[in-house]
Length: 291
Image (cartoon, rainbow, N blue to C red; front, side, top):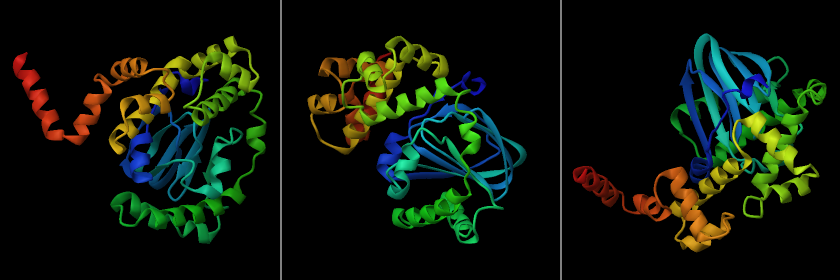
């Protein structure tokens, strides 16, 4: 797939765990192909944006938008200068839509102004204001998003995606694989166990993942587990051994090794940098002076 050539994985777990939902506005931004484990809703405030989602080009103008389900590669660029409000949240943020978000059958839904009812569109100004000011609580934002999505969903027709199923079969395998990894991140995720669960030949699982996402499956799993560990390190006082096992590592030693490999420091130092930021700054200065 062309939109996976420069693919990268974005990690929002820490921010979503802390705030529930991350919202921001951006002007004339251009992004390369990327994916993440969260739901993304983009609303075009002004201008016109060309989204590339799941290999399909979508032209969205002022007042429109697109809801992107987890593990879907997407990118965007402006064809007419303007701004966009973006909302990132976990699949469990809106429980009524959780099963839809976690399904691998539908990669995105278009917010079409001509087909979306007025009661749903009425939520858009408030959501845009939230992306600028964070002026209401999570409960209110959940309500706004629920009303908007309830109006978007009836406007969706699945036929166009069914026609693409054969052409994107290997990518659909990857989306199922990613969903399985997310659901079983604390369990055994050996190639053999994953292949058995998905009823796919092991060598195919490995090759199709690397081909579509430009990274090994093992690297992706390690990244997900370390992201989970980082959240636990700064939000709990659990000992390293407990965190290591809860995040799916076979030993504290393997946890420490992978953490330092990805983060450039051991997990104890990472936790300390949040618990005692002043001491962390002093340590950096001392190391700089010693050099």
